[in-house]
Image (cartoon, rainbow, N blue to C red; front, side):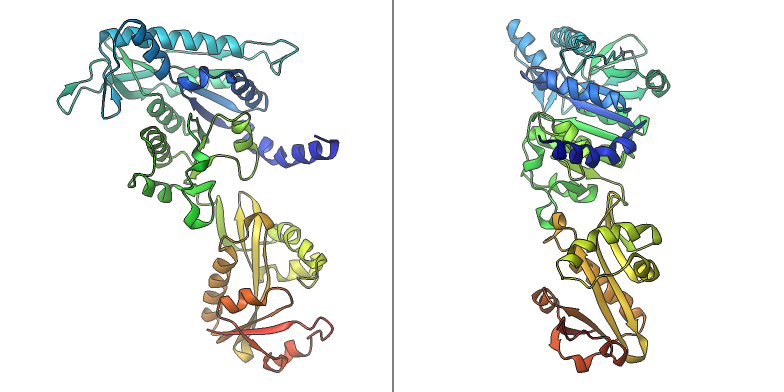
Length: 438
């Protein structure tokens, strides 16, 4: 990376460094991650998150480790509807696998070699009996024995750990008031913990590739999806059983109050790229209505609108506007804001005496074009124009007449414009006049 690219990348992630500092993130990964040769890289990334001020709760799974221990004993794993039946032999394997992997993770997080990315990190990790569990019981006529589900999360103890600047590490094991030990599903445990803590984010590092699910193709946005839309996928057969497990856990978390749930694959650096870039590399389910919102512009949006339209002004697509003029006109604008960034705008200037309105300054960020956002703003402005009693919309354009025609505008002449606008028409620019009846 050359110096300018490095500086640009660092500046681009700065808003997320500020936004995530002091926030509570629950990060869950399966036992598959620990068996990968690049597991250290994931640990390094988790350590970096901690160094950047994120308050971390880690939940790890042990599914493949349990399977290997069962195989060593000559036992076969038993599942009913995707849920393990944990008999006493399997429970011994669960305890062995969970304890071994937990210590391995603690050891890796304790690394502080100057020659590694952990140099000087000095991360403190704490585990505890924070999960009260109860047996799943008999399902479909089968006693699942020591397979359990979360009954209660000791939120106060976990928060004390986080307040001490420690990472809280949870294995998929719960305890009953009678002293029994239960095997838990790591995905369900992560969801329960994130919900109980009211975590700001829950992230699943999955052995599959969520970014390839293409859940939101119909919406024009693959990487981010409203939770309500994600729920539709569970009604289809498009996903594997494992993917459905993760998606179901993610949706339960959003219903439990976690505003954003991220699913990323095992690619090197995927977790960091997902959390510290605007569009990420995985799939994000969000229950946050403000993640991408279409609304009236405010004075705080002036800078964002300027950043959006100035490149188009330099290209001659839009007529230049000064910051002062934009501040005066900002109440005429509608914007689409995505995670704090203005990604689209359009303005309505009414000519009430002529029952006409001008649709002006239509602009969409280059990264978010061809996804229907300009059309969504047009519908919003048409609705506002009808409320004002306007009968027609007009627009002047030099570069994009086809878009207007595709959205119901027809070509017209300068003489069809309101007199006030006609007098300001720039014949050197020679813009096309397009009009739409409302």
